[in-house]
Length: 282
Image 1 (cartoon, rainbow, N blue to C red):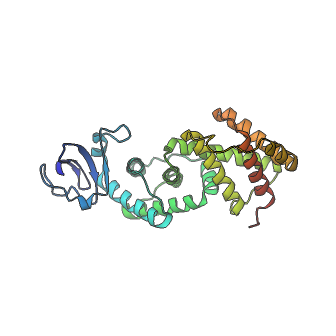
Image 2: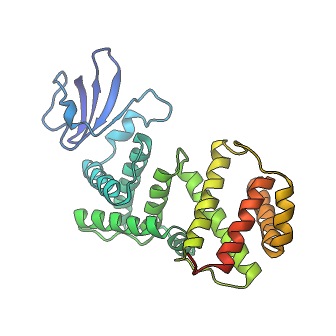
Image 3: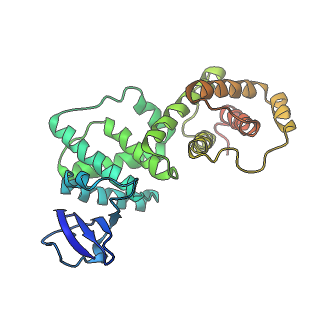
């Protein structure tokens, strides 16, 4: 593999022996290199094929400051160690691009308001939010800057994206908004504030996220279906939870055109009942 062009110290355009081009990323991988030099492949942390539809264009790498690439590598390494989070090459580039733009906004004094979103994300995904705050602290330390608090939310979205088996960042934002709406429905119906630290609350949120990822990835309806009579039994045993699930179904239909099938309703009835009656158990 030989160098074709350096973008900066940490990114370069190269080609292999068959003539296939890659953009490679690695700490110091482009430093002092010239066209035709051999690549030390042991230094490659990421590689992108510019011709693929899911990879960024070469020009996009040229515009990213090398410090953003360097700190992104440190952030992803920290997240892999503390949260067992692994970013795909595409997710890595999206994160690099975001961090680069966040630093520019900070220098320009521009902040994107988060409104009530910050509260929702913090309580819906507390573990990811905590890791996101640590990642922001790392970036601030590296650059001696203070990023807007809204960056904690955007970083949380990137972490959720890395967990979500192929969903894109815009889908992660949509999932977060839908889950927040469903939690509001449950709290309104039962006139309670759910315990965001409880085991059953976390299990409820994770079930909702899994269900929505299935919808977005086209894997919905896969697997063996339950006996239809089970839903009727659940409705009789947990009538209030069943009514809440029907409101959730209407909400998802109005927001996204999704209809819960009988199996979805059975499991959601159980989750709604548990999260509203056994918040401190287990």
